[in-house]
Length: 211
Ligand SMILES: [Zn+2]
Image (cartoon, rainbow, N blue to C red; front, side, top):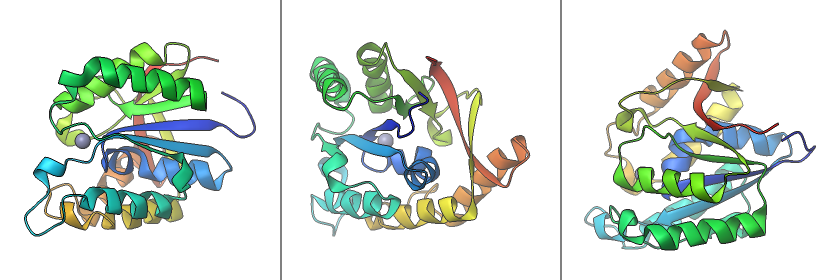
């Protein structure tokens, strides 16, 4: 965990989950010299809003992750049908095992264990199987969390938050969602910052920590 350049793997059941849950931390880690990989499991082609091309989330993902500084070679994109990841549980586990062998991450960021979205739950359950020997933190998506233990925080600067906001603005097809606005995202970052005596922060819950 204390390598000079850590390898951090972000697991996003759907393309924008990583940016919402930990986009500020991704920006900070990359600016500090860490290498970040981003694995997505569904491009949600079945639920793209009318008027957008079916592969719009792929295009938006490329833009959003580039804003955060993730090189395109570190994107690991899978195309499972949205809301049906649990039907493909074993395949997803095998994907994760293969990613683990290839990337050998020092830290994995995945949705919280208490995230009730069926796709998020599946990815995190399989991640706990595939990354038993790796530190794992669960990121916060409050609209899916019945409970959330704020056991870990990452301080963010205005710059980190700006990059998170800019990356989320790339998801033009998702703009109508209640949580997809600057006021909310800034408010949540402020709330988490206040909890640790800082300006902005993102919070995570501890799934596994190996020192
Ligand atoms: Zn999602």
